[in-house]
Image (cartoon, rainbow, N blue to C red; front, side, top):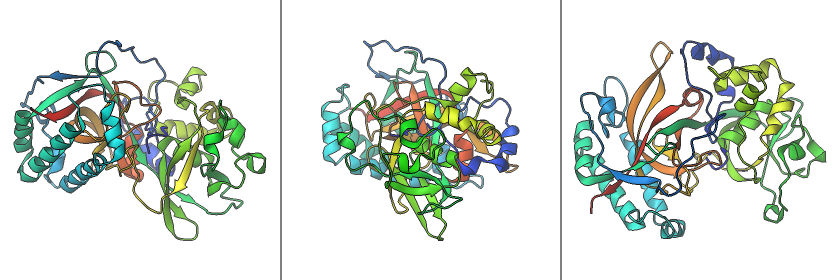
Length: 418
């Protein structure tokens, strides 16, 4: 899924239009626009020394004077103060990773994994033991103590060599769509061409496949591969970013689409392009702000959307949940996307970062949390040891939160002590 980001994150379609702009306006100083399967960056990431491994064993400083500082103290697992815990969701995500670790793909991935401590067997045993601890623990403190006692922490060196990791978020949007072209639904997403592997490189660019206005239609080499049609060009474009979507069809049925492939071009930040050209200020640029700009200036889409030259293809997934790059479902707030050339696929991780939450009065507030997650996805914009894209879930609320997620945190992988 995140493979499109392509994976960053990042983000929002119908769910983030006019009704929620007022909500975001109440959030002071939210971070620069991120995306789903593609994080936004408009300044170069600090270079990483090549000689260092991406993960290093550490003795983490655990300050349990507050929950946010107590590394491994995951309050979200258990219900408390009127909030529903996601204990079952965490176990499901663990089981999804365990399924992956039993595949030929996992065997191949770990045969070539550069950090010798991360063997397929040890990653699998670590997950099995962590699952036992989740089942038996009675509280966040119980689990935190057991993990600190039984596991070794391997910290990502981050984008600066000192552990600083940039976090963004992605989600699965819900859109209205049609199986047939109409005067209202006229912007398509396409199925993967059957001869795509034979396409010569460099691949055609986005503008060559869909035109500046997204309506190249019968003149496109993709004619006949239209999968679904959307009433808003931005909806179709944002699905390319998020990598999947749930669809409410005009005939009353419900289905979904997921990533099937993409042309070979890197991520280009449209938000960064708007800033570069002076169309929008860098400060306070979020996905809702960008969407509002294009709603007020629709012809500008013809200028800016083609600048992301990569083109994503889809397949109908018949209502199945979004899947990550390791081909298992991703779980809301329990799955992350990282650079799979560096990070161990399917492994247990722990993040410490700040995320937005919607309060009872519909204001967004940020809270620093510890969260056990499974590394199950990737994305073309998720590069290096200092990038994490966090899966928020499906639908409007997930999109509201993903669109304003951004900031620095820390990332650890957990292995059973030998």
